[in-house]
Length: 554
Figure (spheres, rainbow, N blue to C red):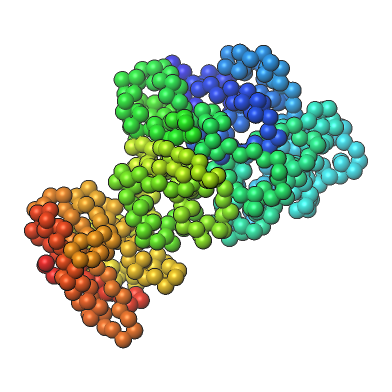
């Protein structure tokens, strides 16, 4: 029985050491048939991007004898494609580790990657370049380069290799957008995008020494971002049919894996846990999850994590409207949300369009379009959680975003106070929370009510097993803020109404006004009709960081 390639993304190592490998070598054929000068293939993390680029490197590279690596692969069945094997100088970089807190650190890491690539061609460059090019090469290798020289380094290298080798160069760039996400998070976005724009444009646009380039990443950054002027870019996202089965495992490939490790008896459960990602018309599994599942001897668990890209998602959700928050929470309970999916992103503009969070969740792997259509040039999808593994991870993500930074112990006490109708404890914890942190409540557009919805929604994720959680719904003669209907009708039902105290109004008056609204609008009618006999109303008034709660049994 073959070993599993846990944490190994080098194709040569996997083949030569006889690790288990799902054959994706037909990616070579599809790329050549596509004929794109520059191809961008965004996919979620842990879907085999780095391994696939490594495979492409060993297939096309003339830096060594790699023919034997492909002797028993699917691509070997195509003699016309095999004529391309080992024919090109290949430059392969990965930006996956360029995730640092300052521009200077990021610049130095990218420079180190460039130096390493130059070193791979050291013998040729030292012996064949002219005196002028020799000085450029020595500046790069010694660290005595300017910013402009580093921006042009890939272009210079490809032209030098073309002149030396007599063959045009292939560029493979993995996780091209990782430095951009880190730069936005840590405040040096402008410096990074300017550098990446110049770095890629020099190497990929109108470069006569370029055979073709393949880039991978998580998101497609819009042309207005770093691809401005790059008119030879062909983008194939998870919404496109092209390459849809080349990243991730198909059902047939998963069956091969399960059969090899004698786990076919768990096939149906495996589908529930790890299947369900929809890449155009192809349904795929996350490779990392499947390999981890097999490595753990068939133990089911949440093995996939996408924490690297959560900062932007958290930032958007924290500033989201109550309506969006309710939709996000409803997906957790099985709802399908129909939304437009944006394929291209300009990172700073995301905060001006909160609906972009749906697209982020799709492209990072938290949601998947079970059905999609193209309407007026825009993708519309029916979005849902793909499988049981992601349901747990999505739940954790929402709880982390909506409940932070309240401590878990305080959350448990607060929830128990709600269930027992203990307004004194409930008010005490909320007041302490507001006094210790206002970050989650310092939201734009002067909408403090939205802040309180954000706080409470985070708590209600935990209560969803025992309560039906409703918000902004009609009952009686109006629309309540929050209603918790117990699934066990003998338990307490809860109605919560928020009121902001105006400048001349006391908190107690505002809290009483909230309770009065619950009475006059007959909000309890819906629960009584369900058979709930014990119902507690909470009127919560607030003014800045001050909060007051009044309660009544209704």
